[in-house]
Image 1: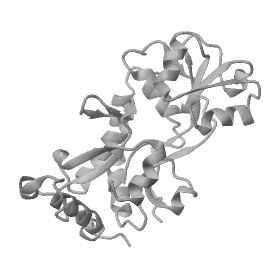
Image 2: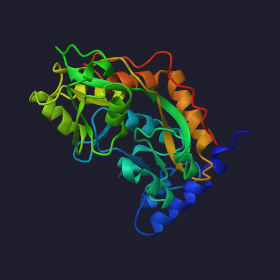
Image 3: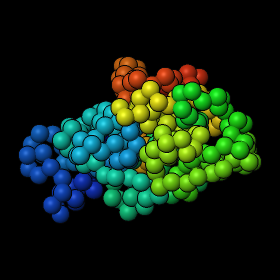
Length: 282
């Protein structure tokens, strides 16, 4: 049975009100304007700050597909735009942010895995990505099998590049960088032949104004990554978040958000997988 929104938001309300007492939250003005259906004055949402097209901090203005989905869900939970507190959620810190109750939920290309479910809960998925390759527009690379003897870039500690080496092209030369932007910069200079990670992340990089027309997503995904909404263990928000995602998809807002954030890139998400069915409540 689906929990009521009042019941589902009780935990988030308590956390947000505690934050407000310590100087956070929206203050009396936020409370008078609504403050969520359970009376919470703010909601803390973790996103990436460095992934164009998904989660990007443009000097305090936040954009991207993850951000748009988060805004929509927050609105369905009763929060206005000015009641959202955006928190940077790097990949390595996501579980800690949830376990330490520093955020209420995370939308940050957060793949749902059994290992992660041991410490956090997930709603969603709200998108299903696949590992792919970003290459120069004139490249003859059509998939990971073509990378033998080539230079491939990914982020330090990423499993993406290692998967290519282990499963597809043993002779690939792996070059690790702190971030994907650095990989793209190297590819612009001709020092590498391809960048690998999830296809929607690559599409976001290609959609950046400075990169448009230079690169393409190969469009030959070789994994399946279900992006979920990270929640604290035992959270009661899952059913209401899934209902919000379903509504966003049904209204066409999901498709519009995806198109707006990847404008100018020849990229289509796998139609057999997207839009997804959000059903991952524990």
